[in-house]
Structures are given as C-alpha cells and as structure tokens.
Amino acid sequence: MISSFLRDIYYFFLYLFTYIIIINLLFLFLHVMLKFKIKMIRIPSMKKLYITDLDGTLLNQNASISLYSEEVIKKIIKQGIHFTIATGRSPIRIFSILQNIPLKLPVILMNGAAIYDIENQKCLSTVPICKTSFQRILDTEQKTNLRGGYILTQNNHLNGIITVSPTLLLQTYLKTSDLTLIHSNLEQKDEETLLYALYMDSSSQKLQFMYNTLKHDSNIICDFYKDVYRQNCWCLEITSSQATKYSAIQFLRTYGSYDYVTGFGDSWNDISLFHACDESYAVANASSKLKAIATATIKSNIEDGVADFLSKLLK
Image (cartoon, rainbow, N blue to C red; front, top):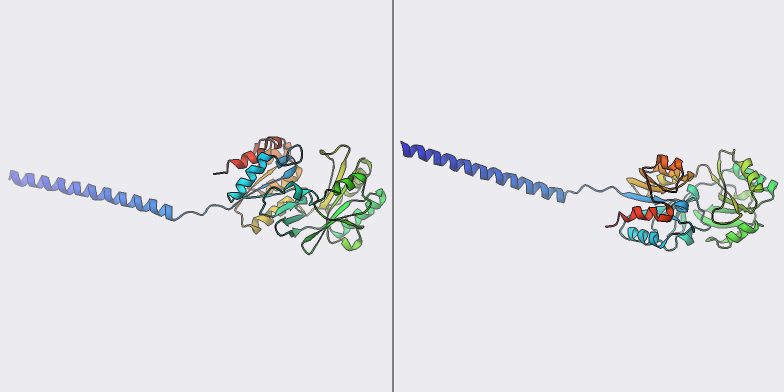
C-alpha cells in the first residue's frame, strides 16, 4: 500500500514536471514567433519633408550658406532625407546661392508665386498677379516714373527678367541675375503672366508712395523694406496675395505624398509656412510672433540653427 502511494506521488510529480516543461516551451515558442512576426511585419514609417526659409533662417549674416550648413544638408540629402527650400526670394539670385546644394525636390520661390523644379528647369505651379492689380501697378509706375524688374511665366517656364530704364541700384543688382535680362517694357499683353515685380531705389520717397498706393489692393502683397545687405537701398516687392507658402506647401505635400512636414523660419512670411507644417521651428533671431506659434525655438541663423537641428537626423 505504501509502495502504491509512493508510486502515485512519483507519477504526480512526473506529470507536473512534464506539464511545466510543456508550458514553458509553449511560451518560448510564442515569444519567438511574436518576435519573428514583429521583424517580418514592419509598420511603414511616415514620409517626411523638411523645408526651410533662406534669409534670416538658413542663410547667415552674409546672405550665404555656411560651409557647416552646406555639409550637413549634403549629408542628409545623400542619406535620403527629403529637404527643400521655401523662400521669398525670386529666381534673380536664388540659384547661385543654392549652387552647391544638390537639391532634388522642387523649391518654393517668391513666397509661393512659383514652385520650381530646378532639375528640369520648369515651374510646377504659378500664381500670377490678377489683371486689375496689374493695371494698377502700371498706373502707379507712371506717377513715380519708376521702372522695376519683372518676372513673367509662359508655358511653365520663367521668361527672364524684363526691365527698361531701371534705377542704378536695380540695374547693378540685375547684372548678377541668374535669369536672362530682357530689355523690354512691361506691356498689357503681359497681364496674365506677371509673377513678381521688384523696385529698388536709394531714396524711400517714391517707393513709399507706390507702397501707400498699392497696399490697399487685397489682390496683391506689397513688401516694402530697407535692404539689410546693401547700404542706402530701399526695396518694394509685389506678388499675388494668392501666393503663400501655406498653399505652396500643401501642393508639395500632395506632390510628394508627404505624411509629415517640418518647417523652419524667422519672419512674417513664415507664419503661413508654420501653419502648413505639422512641426515648426523658429530660429533664435526670429520675430516674437513667429516664436509664439512655433513648436520650439532653435539656435539662430548665424549659429547654423537649422543645420544643427538637421544634423541630429543623421545616422
């Protein structure tokens, strides 16, 4: 009877031990299979775009891209990170600034008046100044006897810079243009193709008059300012009010099928840029209004703030 009892105990523990081993093996098998499935079934990562303003943001105090920023941008592009530019600058001086950057994506120019494919040298999208505003600009020119430099588009291409009898400052500036100079008057036939008008003068008086006359036109945006890079130089730039960095980024988001956009900026024209982005960073030298709506503040433009941020993306 005792031997029968001991035999029962022996088989009990034998079954228990076998059960524990089987359970552990089962858990080990499930763990391995789960780990294997996680490796095999990868959740696709979001397609991201990084886009920056130029003046006051990526460019330094000399209106150029520092060697450090240049190297970082080259590395992130080589690594496959999607990067491009959204600037208020016109094509007059943009391509020479970016000549060492191997940009593969379209760039936003003139605050969204044109989205330009550098590789294929054509516009993907343009926003011309409307007819009524075009005529108002011509009439205001006549009153001041000032002539500007004008960028027109035709068949998705930039025609060059049209100008006749510009001021000495504008003439000097246009001599270094990245676009062909066309010596011709702005005419009525150009009314549906004008993207951008630029005026320069050593005195603010005439440009102030033009600005005061045109600023109430809701169909255009007039940017009147003293140039920070040249002494005694006043500028007036005119584009369509429908041309914004916001609408241009929405175009690029669809064009490139981007799930997430991160932007960098410093000034008033970057407010619409930030509103279009999922994440936005103001450089330390940015306006207080822009900092107020930014995700965070990064180092200033002269400290290579944008490049410093992007360098952290490198593997």
